[in-house]
Image (cartoon, rainbow over all chains, first blue to last red; front, side, top):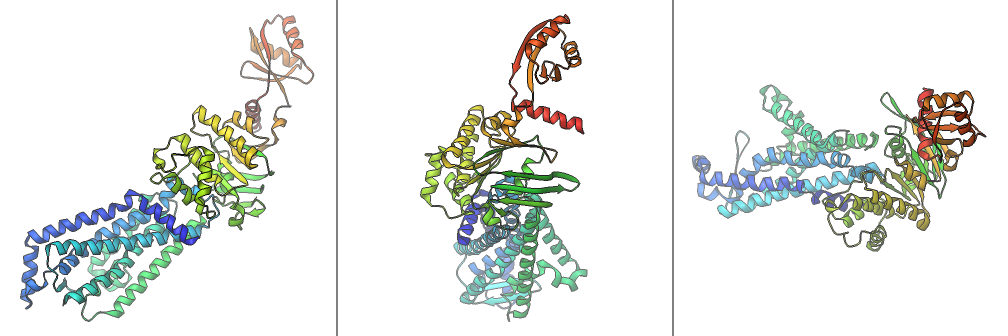
Length: 278
Length: 300
């Protein structure tokens, strides 16, 4: 029955048009960035940076490099927006529409219902991240050759990788991006489980992330970075470092898993305690 | 089938349900009456485990809803006012989803129920294309899918046109006759309750102010519609003579026990008060309900 409940939750989630807003927005953003990279000084500046460091630019301005360049802002900005939008809807929208009252007139426990919603949200997050990675690489491949990967994140990472290693690390980084997406969705689901509107749940989740992001940018908070959620969201980028900082990645993964568990437990407690009325 | 024991619910400072105790026996169509905010929906919410009681106990089919939700609601179907569905999915998909929260239901059973409620041919259409009447039928279908023994209907006729209301009423009767269901019906439509229910409870500001057989609501007083030149004077005269107990609506009088209409006419004519019309009025549930509410207001 659990599998059936999960399947039904996926029907509900993927049957809605607004679920696909994120997918559509990513496609548009990727193509816009691709055009900008191809037809502005963006590409030539990267080539200069590579040549300045003794590399042959032609070997590293590739589909993998461009795909990663496209992912960085999208994972930081668009992904939280769309996962928060879906997470904020999961419970609050059903309360608003009255369908939750229909469900809760049946003998399903609230905990199980919330758990299948959370899992369905996790599947959505994974699908969104995978689609983001695959399409970024696919679109980039249409314009750029399949060659080595150049990773440059100012002040953090400067690395060149062979095409095989680049693809392996690119795929591996998606595990951590999925964890980020699940965390954002979990926060939005937590707010959604309280007695508030779906939009309010989404806004609260985004506000929390935005506050973290702002604090991360303030020099005073540098010593407190490990307490900021967005700091741990950078784990996926660290995969491309040489050598790979496993300890730091593991720490971030643990923090994010703990946040996921905590937000789910708060959501379960709030959802269990509240009255569902029309 | 349903037993509420000293049930209380408080929302902040507001007491929504006060010490509610009632029992719905198997096989009855039981009416739950009361104006908006009387506590009907809160009571139904507590019966279905959607609203947590502040104190008291709710037993459905012998099980405590709070402690044994699965067993208590296994054989229960419910319909709410303005039934909500996943509008972007088909009726069949909605039924599959909603029924799965009770038990696994075969496609054949879903088809049977769709035919029973008269939605054959439209079951693959998106629910957003459905009229209000069709949504009401779909609501009934989802309530019937777990093969319930108890149906809880919260304002099922709300928003329906007169034809839809009539159809819903006939369906409720069919449900009891053909499927032998116990039905709890919460409704604003007193005429509907009068036609369907065998027993009623009336709530007012969270308190139960009446509970009993429907027949018991009709035996208390004989009302008569009186048309005279001066109704106020006539009432005063009749009250002095202890021939009536009270009046209402500037045209209705309640006869004292043993008094007949010819005595009323004679008395008024003797006092030079012309009588243009006097008609015994059968007391309806509406009369009973309104007089009950008036008594409650006066008691406060």
